[in-house]
Image (cartoon, rainbow, N blue to C red):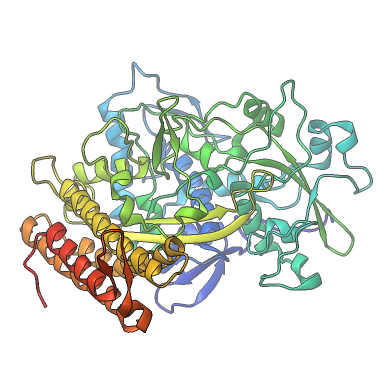
Length: 573
């Protein structure tokens, strides 16, 4: 298949939605960067796939604009090798100053405020310079290794000979809509039977990027190392992601284009394709060192892959695990919320599990903004970056931000970590509200307090449902959990609307009272639905240890009493 050609820079493979027509279109890398303002968003097979590809696109932009300004010129404080377009002599910590940092901010501002709303010619020049690394076939196959490189890294018994060998993954396995292994058929799949392995080249590229980010742990083949290691999940698979979503793809890319890190000096970017050789990259990965730059962490591999093509054009994919770097205090990663490990007192990326599938972003507001300045909360890097832009006056004071998330959730099985669910979510908030100056009445603290009160009311409703379940002789806990989940679903849109309409000029107390009134109504509506399905057994109720009758009316009255006490608003109705 050496005569086949497919280049990501010039051949269409990126699915987007056109802003004006709302139609899906497939474009190349060059076309995307030239016309990003004309596209509403990425439109791949899955939202998690879109996130993986967004990070790939950002790796290109971060690399380019950390070296060249909006006039396509290298920064004065860097020495750029003309042939490689890489930094040959970087600024050191003693020489790096505020003016250098301001150059990066100026580049971002100029690009963002460009009337045409697109990226400059230097991005196209860069893609053409590394065109051979964006080929799906050839000497530097994209996100893959050659057969000789693969055989060099793996043990002799795992090597490829005459197109055959162990350690293969099927197309239907790297397709995360199917994720079917040889031993576990995917029953609910968008494709059936022999069609599960059918794939076009543009789709294969999208799944290659996705699979490197969202790999499970079923691989039996690993590269040779002096020390044993366990194959790890893909890096993005380990994150509870957060990113900024804009009104156009250009705006989304710009808002997530982190060129300056808070309180950190400049670091040269090094995406995976800029390594001198695959061997150099793998040798670094063997050391399990956390990348020191965003482009590298956005393009990190979880596997070395080799695709062997038969005469009919069908691919056989060979896969071998490589060591993953540590995730503790990996703050170079901007797109995750963090949790503190109480055993080590170090931060790790938060992970969303099936048990927390229904928990919306707004309920974890305090993990996105360090409301109390607490030592056990570390704000996501993307939130710090947006705050820097606001403080610099580069984005307007009242700019409306959308923080979004796209998460592929594993089944929790230690031997597979197969995808079990995908969840995407967002919350809209005014930048002036999100980054309100810290004072006794500042918005983030008031929002977090309001969410905590909402959780208290949620517990009141759960206890109401629990008691109803006991009266009905159900599995009371399961019944309460099911009703509670449905109740929180009913809160999502109203709370997000309340949050989105907050401004820094609001009367805080009045706005919070309005939410309390909405919350009370939603609770009573949810309780009313339960009461409407009551039976004679619910009316008779149960007699407790004190001889008191618990029936649907007393339980409902108790819920109303709890609402009055906890919400501290006048009883209505």
